[in-house]
Length: 220
Ligand code: DX5
Ligand code: ZN
Image 1 (cartoon, rainbow, N blue to C red):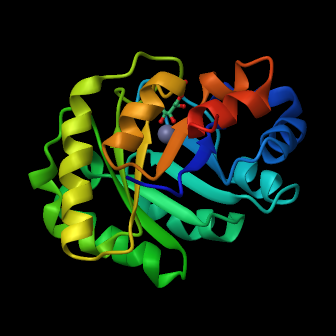
Image 2 (image 1 turned 30 degrees about the vertical axis):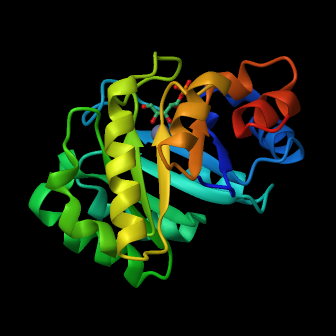
């Protein structure tokens, strides 16, 4: 059982017209990470924001920046996201494929943490060799592109499998789950071994954000 669960609110569900205030709200609510969903309209059918948004948010908070790159050719932009203030940069297996190891090493070479992300229909076996290179592995529990989608429970088996690999090898790696997390699905994810929970709509859509963060973490 993972005791130190961290919450990563996804700003995708925040009000972009007052982003600074939204970040402060989740910071005050006790979140540890900020999850930044970068989408290019090509790798996923939606467009969000890019490097400047990350740099501007960096001015208002010391929270850990978890940049989830849903873009084609992420290797072209790693350096810019590092300069903008990313702490973790995560890239998709489905985009990088055989180049994944190189991209992870490239991210590490800038002195930030690296992570790989797998879609709901990608088996763990595809990325098993690269897990030891990562600081974080993210299991998507929705198909990427939009906030507010329904949690896909079938991915929990993959979380358990990755948790077993991490523990068996004694690796220091966060296991993140992303998509459809609320207080109910969070419990399933924690039981499956996840240590970082991304939550967009369940946090920013709540009237009491502090309570929402606590409920997701499982605090009574
Ligand atoms: C989906 C994004 C997620 C999303 C989560 O493409 O990667 O981070 O914002 O939003 P919720 O928690 O609403 O599913
Ligand atoms: Zn995400």
